[in-house]
Image 1 (cartoon, rainbow, N blue to C red):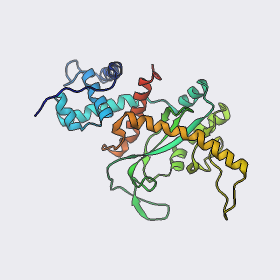
Image 2: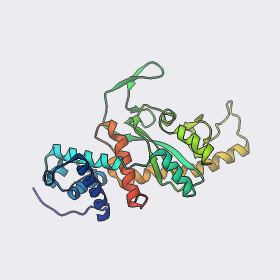
Image 3: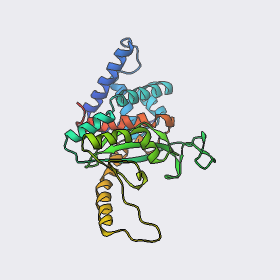
Image 4: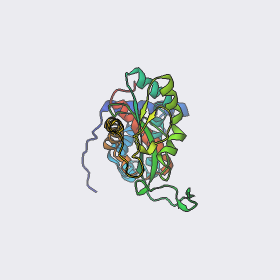
Amino acid sequence: MIAYRAMLDVSRELAWRVSRLLEAERRRRGTRKNSRALTCFRQAVLGLRWFRQDADVTALGRDHGVSRATAYRYVDEVIDVLADLAPDLHNALEKAKADGSAYVILDGKIFSTDRCGEKTTSVKGKQIDLWYSGKAHEHGGNVQALSGPDGFPLWAADVEPGSTHDLTAAREHVLGALYRASSHLDLPTLAHGGYDGAGIGVHTPIKQPADDQILHVGNRTYNALLRGLRRIGERGFAILTGRWRTLHHITASPGKIGNITKAALVLTHLEHGRLK
């Protein structure tokens, strides 16, 4: 084998922050001192390499002098301690209002994963792959998220199978809180046409009338303004996937996609000084 030096393009401060979280978790578990193969800092570096470089876990274990099984366990621990810090939905909405946001943006994304054989029955009564998304034409998990007016990601939901429609996933995880934000915080939500019928406070484009009728100019203007503002919200997922490459294609169990996305969100908040 050929040895070589490499640089990890994250700040040392971020690695220390993750290291302190791991140290606190080891204390909570009652882990004896010097009983682990890696220090908290080295484990943090291993985890950050997995997020940033989408590095193969077996190769990570070899690089850090631990077994494949230990490397997988250490990566899972990093994911869990970070995901535990993910913003609560109600707190995220209240903070957005306190920070002066006039609205939040709701969007969903299918995070690509390996092919899954689990089946379910569709609304038409047919057997389909539970984790296959007809929208994305691939297997993956559906994660709903909120972004601020500037497109910065604020909150992410637990994962739903890829066959789940955005509106169905939103009803399960976020719409109740958005109704409260609209009525109590005067904080509306902007969303794309897939969320049509979401309910009070969730603004979606007005649909084109049937029979080739033309929308009124006022409605067309409304749609243009809403789409222009909402389009920035797509930057939220772009920030996460652009920075943390492991989100490009997740080879772990699809049930872990939610925690992995939340962990990436926390890393992003730490890098931008959104978490103290």
